[in-house]
Figure: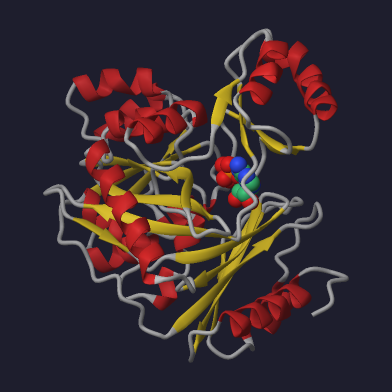
Length: 392
Ligand code: ADP
């Protein structure tokens, strides 16, 4: 397999570039705009179209030996027709299908016997759902989630009481719930001690390989940092590894998947979310592991041997550089300042426009010791350079 078609041309596709070069693989992307990050690194004959445009994917298929995803907001039903005609998708569409809707995903994980927060779908008559919350002991605070198309915390709302829930659903009831009654799910709020994540890859032969578990830190539901490896007991690490294997084997998946977890104060691990693609929590692997998640993904989808996922340093911290204003700046001065930090690797996605919360780049700093405290100090110093008015 030498030509990989990628649905989505954002930073996740962009970060496949170095790995593709190393492996002698050519990338072709389907993405809406010529300004999207991955356009600069892929072949000249990219397909410019919406992610869910299956006709465009048919074009992409003509130019590719295999098609993979950097973005899961696809139209599975329309793509199935291409699969029937022999287009090779990795992961296959059947492995994506149970994951695209957060409610279906929760049901799939629960039915597999994997630990998840208690959850309930919001039905058209949402007042009944409100009663269900109490009946099912989900209680408040509760978490309201858009079932589809949520990302970076958009579509996830922590709701403190029944009044706030009613208000939120009233806002949506007119424009969303009437047209799309199955738009939301509610789940119990987990007062987690930490959030963890793991990147797992599965090969065509069924071999599964995981990266070190990381701790992720979110603010306002958006990932700000990842600390690798997470400081967790071997029992927790083994449990996470087991969950990743069970899931990828059950899906008969090929490629890299990102899995997010809650670790409760009493040491229980619950699955929060599964992304059928490379993931923000695995960005540290570019600089800190023998094989990056992007290389691992290409190796898996091209049917090559899986790479070694060992870290090349005792620890690492990854900090997202999020937009905090509307601007067309490339923030070169700030980036240069961050680059001065010893062992810092800055990755800038080359987006032409900044908006609050938009992922513009990330920094990974390699650490000489495995110290969570040191990782947090370094993360804060990066953030004090990056964000205006943030004290170190
Ligand atoms: P997205 O798909 O947009 O990333 P998530 O469902 O992963 O959204 O939620 C984003 C963040 O919101 C999580 O990382 C976590 O910090 C918080 N969150 C989500 N669900 C829960 C929950 N059930 N209990 C507590 N916090 C939650």
